[in-house]
Image (cartoon, rainbow over all chains, first blue to last red):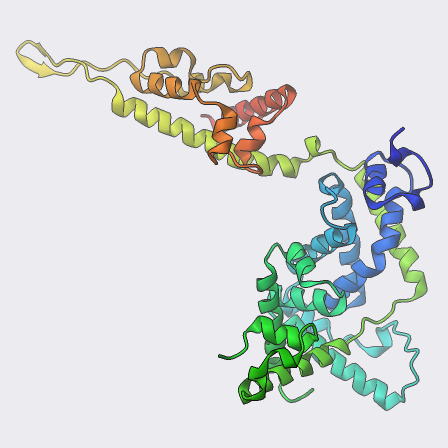
Length: 191
Length: 211
């Protein structure tokens, strides 16, 4: 009996879990979603800055991953593979123009639960500063934006980012450098 | 010489020490760039993703589950239409190019018939019509000699046939003619059933395009 057909799903490694999905074992893909949904959602949110859009994009990422499961060869981690799909989905779907209009998502609509003990004024200032930085990131060229998001918020190494973006480590570092330099230009002295 | 982007990024991220770049001690522009990089890293680091409601995660999972259920079973590589389009587009382009090359060379290298005189006025006898292109590639699906009978009465086709008959696919691959990952490589490494299916699709495409 193949590994993918035996034992609890939670004990399967990534490759076996993917094989279990391809063998249509019940719950296998649900487990992949459960393990990676937060990271995928956060990636999408970083690109669009809006909960509803990030939610839709996350669903799209998982659906595309499901359709393309047979092409997962295990040469990278499942997370890296999902990031690659996520970056493509986000870059293809999102234009800076549509994003900028929504980056000022009203505080009342946000589901943010701030557990830190901040004063209301500090919280507002921090939110405004964050909104400005997010808006500036959304105006970066596509590869610079993707590089900055993956490096800053998903703690990926330069090599992993190069794998996701299909480029070299040198190109990733150059993109990262220019992303930060452009961020400085866009934000000016406001930060 | 100023620090390059790699060095500045490494120092700003802390994977390399300032002490390893003595140039920083004497170059104000490089120090300013490093300061800006660090300031932007700090500003970007402070932007957090709002945490959705705890109920959101299960909601997302069920949305994905519904979408996947509507999708059906994950497609195998064999049935992946997108993959076939990726494969067939270059394969079709290569096939079409070969057909055009063979057809053109056939016309250019065809022997000219001797000039004749009829009733005192010179005329040129019309050469026999070339074989239909469809006949030339008709046998691609079976993997038999692609040129077939068409080669036997055409010098250019005979030349192509004699050259390709001695061509070993592995040797062609080693020579870089069909690198791994290319359409040619994929086509030459297909199973019999895959070759039959490819032939069927090519014939359909030929019939559809009226070739």
